[in-house]
Length: 139
Image (cartoon, rainbow, N blue to C red; front, side, top):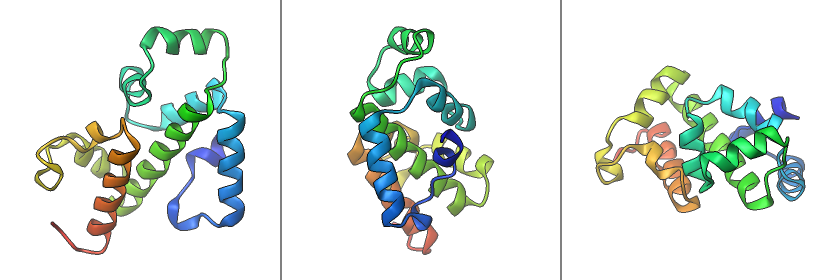
């Protein structure tokens, strides 16, 4: 299951995948699956706790107790995974996309793109920006 989540990609999602995502969100993502996702991302535990609005202490408790994230946190984990995989696809490799996430971006108001990952609106803004880059439409 965790491998399927780490390879999620907007362009490959069909209706069956959407129902799988809905089911995954409703059931919640197990901490072990989250760990697999987090290990493939460039984000620290501190950054993930910020994105999900959970304290690092709560994260540690989830890990220790092998907890499952609630639907809201599970959905955010999936949204971040999707936008991250899209970015890697658009930039051609992980290193280039990771560098873009860290660089202040004029088109995004002069902030680092990864700073937008803490809200669904910010994630949507990143997805839109990646689509513009993909199609050569730079703001």
